Amino acid sequence: PSSNRARQEALRANIQADQVIPLRQLMNEPPQTFLQSGRKGVLLYYAQVWALTHYLMEHPIYRKGLERMLADAQGGTLTQVLKRRLASMTLNSSMSRDTTLGQAVVTEYFDPSFDQFESGYWRFARKQAAVATITQ
Image 1 (cartoon, helix red, strand yellow):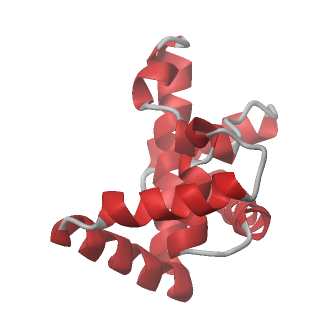
Image 2: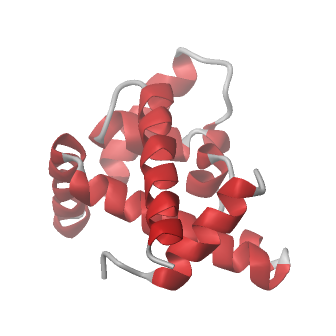
């Protein structure tokens, strides 16, 4: 659901405390990583993934990218597309392959500028967090 008080509240509390998961880390590490930090880490992980999902769904261009990514996954070409993107990124960069998977997803399907995408995500997340404060 687009309105989830628990996710909004966790997001709000962590943004206010400046204890958020950097977007690159959120997109590159498996959920198990966040289980190690206990209940608070898991709640923050789910709150931020919830916000990211809504960001993609509500942004007209990113929604089309999400639909294309899901179609590639359904058609069995997602891995091939991302391998090609990763290969071109690592040839032109000093970044290692494991630290760029999230960036490859973003630049292939959503925005050629990860930094621009990330800035928009944080604006959207702060807006969602503010909604949690207003509805209380």
